[in-house]
Each structure stands twice: as C-alpha cells, then as structure tokens.
Length: 170
Image (cartoon, rainbow, N blue to C red; front, side, top):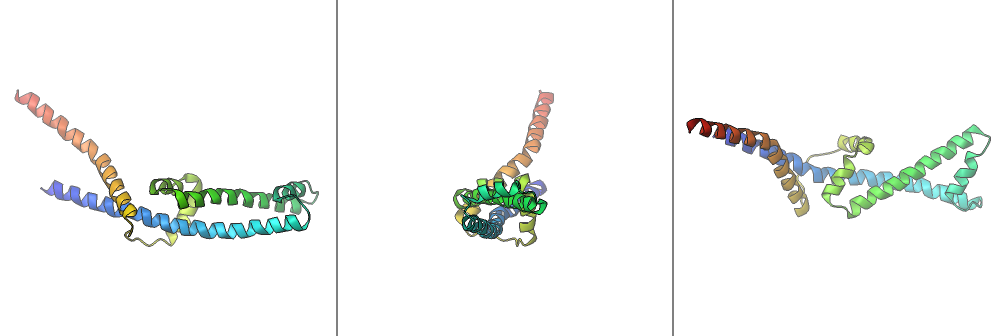
C-alpha cells in the first residue's frame, strides 16, 4: 500500500514537472522573438548601408570589407557576417515555434548548441500550469512515458522474482 502511494506521488511530481515544459516553451519563444527582432533591426541597417553605397547586397558589402587593409574594417565585417548567420538561425527557430508541435519546440530548446538561450530563459521563468489542451496533453503524455520508463526496471525485477518463486514452489 505504501509503495502504491509512493508511486502515485512520483507520478504526480513527474506530471507537474512535465506540465512546465509548455510554459517554458512559451517563455523561450518570447525570448527568441526579442532576440530575433533586435537582430532583424541590425540586419536591416546593414541592408540600408549596402544599398546606400551601391552594393548588390549585404554579402557583397561584407566580402568587400573583408578584403580591406584596415584590420578594424575586416573585424567589423566578420561581426556582420556572424550577425547574419545568427539571423538565419533565429529565422529557423521562429519558424519552429510558429509551426512546430511541442515535441519539436522542446527538441529545439534543449539542443546543446542553444544551451545559453535556455539558461537565459530559465532565469526569468515562472512555473505554472498550461491553459491549452495541447499543453496539458503534452504534459500528461510525457509524464506517462517518463513514469513508465522509470518504473520498467522495477516491473521487470518483480516479474523475475515472481517467476523464481513459482519455479521454487514447483
């Protein structure tokens, strides 16, 4: 009886933790949207500069600046290239959060390459319960899977123990 109560408490804890993932995804999306907007503003500035000085596009301007003799101009061009790469990566992330399901969003958030973004999101994260059916369904499904996988070794062990007892009794 005590083990059943303990098992239910563990499941309840796992469920509450799993219900935090949709909330975390929402917070992460807000963080990503802010970073995307800021980066987009920078890229638009680069595009305006390229247009003003008659370059075909930003990449052409950056390539030209990378050939400049002045080290500071080359360093600035490299920073612009990194900003463009970040912008492209953020566009993919925004698309994932706009069109993806919670499993895709979770995989995106927990990608080790974006661990820094997750850390920054967690700093301002406030636990809560999702108010969407997909969020609740996701939490219940994840909780059931994690609970089952965590219980599987104990289930297998008790079945083996029962078989051994039956074999000794026969």
